[in-house]
Length: 264
Image (cartoon, rainbow, N blue to C red; front, side, top):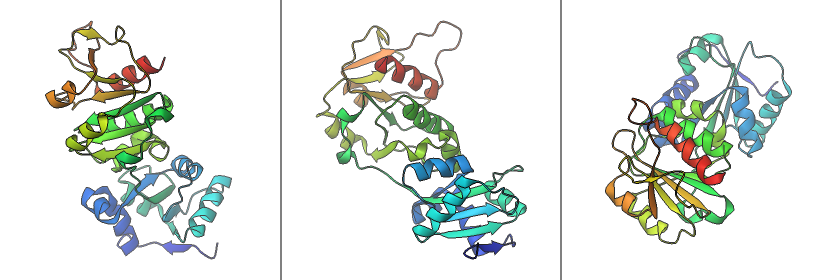
């Protein structure tokens, strides 16, 4: 297409700018993030999100979705760039990179804009640290029909390359909110259903509790769990029993167990 720009230099300014999105300070400064693969691009388009920059590898095969991505990118005033395989490797930091990459604007939903009654379950995470866990939780929330994921306090960036990869495209479908603990506690006061925490020292099993919809599931930090302040704000704290030698579940797995427990 005549609108495409060809880049072959690894030191090109556009290549440098896109590659810099691996760094949080650059994502924070620009409000942009990187998504890799035509599947991700397709998920974005389905949610009305077009790339600001669409990078297409020279070896990319023609595909109707790719043509749609080109058209939608141009419609919003974005840029289409054709790049070499070495550039794709450099940007992705992978030896076998995807042949289509997109640069998108980040989107956060304000806490005040959330509507609890629109979904049976919501997830809130306190100080989650692992991007793979966060991305998997966002994907799980999408799969289970949750309303959104609320990030409380100092959490890992949901728009990091690692977190976005783990969402498998759900980063475009799930409302993501971030807030301070104080703001969350003030907002939680008007929650119309159950607020459920998970703690290893809880005495109620997760299958024994009564959950009123909409349910808000609170999950704590991977190492420390929920803080006392947030645990005290829950209507009930529950535990998932450990029947083997392991003393805890991975955070993303535990969140998945809880989400389906309250939505079944």
